[in-house]
Length: 47
Length: 470
Image (cartoon, rainbow over the protein chains, first blue to last red):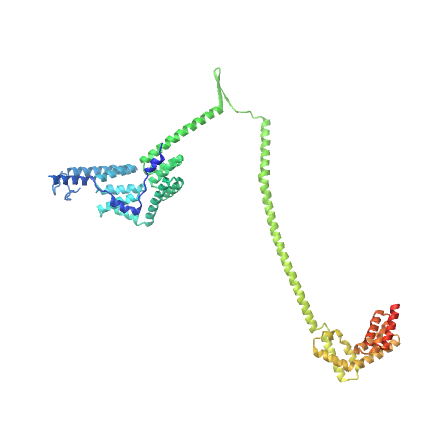
């Protein structure tokens, strides 16, 4: 049986257009390639 | 594919030919990202938008510069109604590659159409408002807001799901099912949608079973009795009565009575009241007309009265000017009398005859002072002589017992000279002898009044006494 309150918590307010700029700036764009490059850089420095 | 270190184009080797950096792992990461992109694309093609989002995000986690994955992710977000998320991805995509990037077209398509942009913003605001209503337990308001949101953006999956959740909570399962089916049309494999649908199926199937069982049991108990009789199975329907002619007739009669009662109590009063209303309307119209006519009649009466008054006034004025053959004629007669006297002062008889034409009422009614003065003057000059002449004639006639002629002449004599006592007394005697007692009395009284202490007065008194005694 679905619990209405629990299900309702899963619904979050949607971003408005005015908030889009902030959301883009706050987005973490780190990907695996960046992690790999960082790891390789660390390894080189240790050497 | 370019080298992460120097940006050179990579070959099939596991190292960069430009800077010599080890690119084997890097290449694998790029390949994985592309694989996830391909999976995402396949899912998007079959409308598994949730799956596509998941795969494309994975792709971007491996390679954030995967422009195709990012653009596709934006498209999928837009299709599910998440316009701001879509715009975010396209903006980031454009920042990574400014030229020859289809994200530019997507962004322009939204931003140039300000009405659409405004609609998108309104949709988001209303959705957030609906969510807050849900948290405040104002479900009716939330439903209204969500319906508005979905009318503006029918692809907004989260709004559909929230509305379905409210319907499930309020046990309106069919409405919830409708919303969720709309969701599946947009996003076929959305987990939340499928979970809600399963819940509805569970609940409704359980309720249906109970209902069906109850209906079957009821039907069975109502319908038939089965029993075996030897090799035969006897099925006897219950609650079936034979229709006899009498009962049919009775039913018909009851039906007629009900029909008549319905007509009497329902139809007839309405008809009667409608007719009464019509009659009242006509009555009102007739009354209004009657009032109007009465008013008109009153007005006409008043007008008639005022016109009659005006006519009388005018007639009176006319009388004063024209005199109805009186004053105008009197004026002519006076002028004639004066002319005759001036021509022949001895011809008093003729002058007197003309003056006799002038009625005393005309003289009194005359508004001309000159007329009155002239009349008085001519009477002064000629009156006494004319009076004597008429007295002689009248007295002669009296002596000859011609009382009628005597009265005529003596009256003229009195008129031309009211101071002629003999004429007045003879006139009274003439009236007396002629049998006109009333006039005789009046004239005797005049004599007594005008000539007191004279012999004529005492003789008048005697005659009066004799007349009263008789």
